[in-house]
Image (cartoon, rainbow, N blue to C red; front, side, top):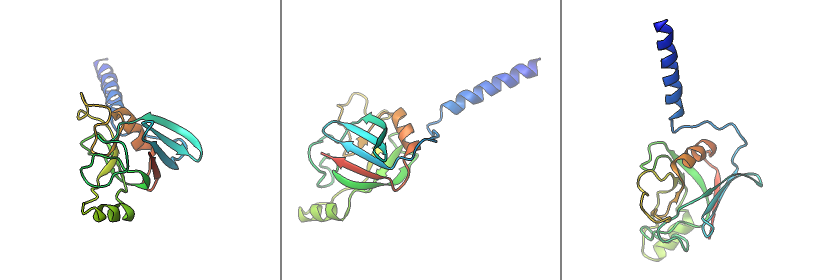
Length: 164
C-alpha cells in the first residue's frame, strides 16, 4: 500500500514538474510570417493571411523611427527574418531578428556609427519590473508566458516585417 502511494505521489510530482518547463510544444498551423506594428504596440503571428496569435508588445525606449545606430534605443523597421534561437536568454527565451541588413549597415556607416545588433523578440523576465512599457534597448518584449508560446511556434527563417 505504501509503495502504491509513493508511486502515485512521485507520478504527481513528475506531472507538475513537466508543466513548469519553459519549453512548450506546438502542433498547430505553421507560422509563415510575423508582423509587428510599432505604433499600435502589437505583434501578429500569421499563417498565410490568418492571424494565429496577437500580442501586446514593448519596444525600445525610443520607439519612434527606424533604428539608425547602436545605442539609439530604437526598434528597427523593415523586413528581416528570425535567424537564431536563444534558450538561455537573460530575458527568459529569445528569438533573434536579422538586423542589421546591408542597408542598415550602410546607413549607420554614413553617419559614422556602428549599426548595433542583437535585436530579439524576448520575454520580460525580472528586468522589466517597474519600468515603462517601452523599456528595451531596441528589442520587442512580451511576457515570459507569451514568449514560451512564441518560441514553440516560430521557426528559424520565419520572415518578420516591422512597421512604423
